[in-house]
Length: 446
Ligand code: LLP
Image (cartoon, rainbow, N blue to C red; front, side, top):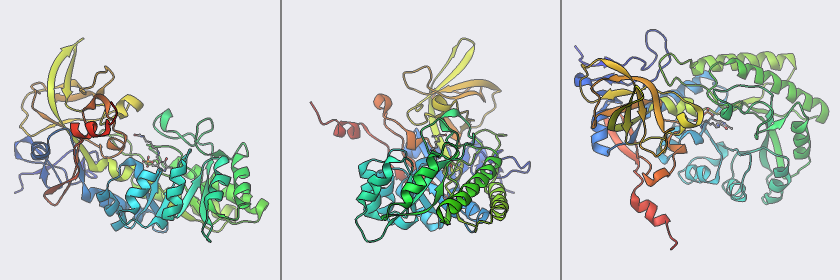
C-alpha cells in the first residue's frame, strides 16, 4: 500500500474544488510534501531559500488543456506571467504561441528558437527599441494601442511585406479581481474605446497605411476573472464591432484576439473555472454572435498567462523569526514583497503549509510576513500554522508560478530567488539566485 496521500486542493479533487497545489502534489511520510516526485524540504536544502519550484508537467498539462478547450484557436501564452528559456521550450513544444510586451521578452524567446511568426507584441507605450526588435525579428502581430503609434510604426517598416497588426479596443466591460488589473472598461490607460469612436478612428487610420496590414482586433478585459461570462459579452461586442467595420469600410477582418485573464485558485475554495469551461462559453458565443451578424467566424486567439503558470509554482521560504504583537502571531520568513509583491499591490490572499517535519501541535491563526523594512510586507494573512512553528521550518506557498518572480524587485538588495523545475523525481536549476556580486557589477559609478 502506498504511504503517500494526495494533498487537499491538489489536482481536481473529489469535491471538484479547483486545484491550489500542482496535481502531482503528495504528502510523504514524515509530513513532507512532494511535487513532481521531489521532496520540497530536500529542494529547500539543496537550493537554499527562498526558492521557487515549477512543476513542468503541470505547465504542460495546462497548456494541453487550453489547446483541447479551443482546438481551432491560437493559444498564446502571456510571457509576463513568467518567462525563462525552459518555459519558452515547454510552450513551444506544447504547440502554443506567445504574447510578449517588451523587446526583452521578445528577444529571450526568439533567440531561444521561438518562431517569431507565432508571437504577438503588446504594449500601451512601446519604446523605439520594442518596435525595432519586433520588426527585426519579424513578429507575427503587433497590437496597436494608441493612435500615435500607427504612423510611427508604419514609417519603420522597410521590408517589402506589410507588418500585420491588430487594434486593441475597449469593449467597455468591467471584469477582474482588482481595480489595478481591470483593463476592459473606460477610464484606464489601455485600448481604444469603441463607444467613444476612438477604436474606429484607429482602424480607419491603420487601413490607410500601405505598410500595415490590419488583420483583426484585440481586447484584454483584465486579470483573475473568475467567471466565463465577461468573455461571452466581449465576444458579442467585438463581433458586432467587426460587422460594423465591414459595413463602413468594406473589410472583413479575419482575426479576433480576446486576451487572457483566466482565474486560478490561490486558496482552497477560490472560484477558478477550467479551461474547458471558459472555452465552451467562448466558442458558443462566437458561433451565435457570428450567426447573428452573419460574420464569417474569425480565427480566435486567447492569451492565458496566470492559468498556465501560477498553479504549477510553489514558493519555499524558511522561517527566521516568530513573535506575538497586538494579540497576533507573526511568522517572519526569508523572502517577502521583493519576490511576491501581489499581497501588497492587490490585497492578494494565499495559503501556506509547513513542510518537512511531522506536525502534531494544534493549529492557530498566524500571519506570515516577509523580511523587508515595511509593515505592509505581509505574505499571507490569517493562515493556519502549527503552534510550534519555529525558526528553521520550511513554509510552502502554492499558486506562486505567475507574477511573482516576473514582478520581483531588488528591494533591500536581498537578491531575487532562484527558479527550479521538477519532473519525474528530478529537479534542475532554471534561473540561479541573484547574488551580491550581481548587484556590485551593475553599480558602475563612483
Ligand atoms: N494579454 C494581455 C494583453 C495582458 O495584458 C495580460 C496580462 C494577459 C494577456 C495575461 O493575463 P493573465 O491570463 O495572466 O491574467 N500582475 C497582475 C496581473 C497583471 C496582468 C497584466 N496583463 C497580478 O499579479 O495579478
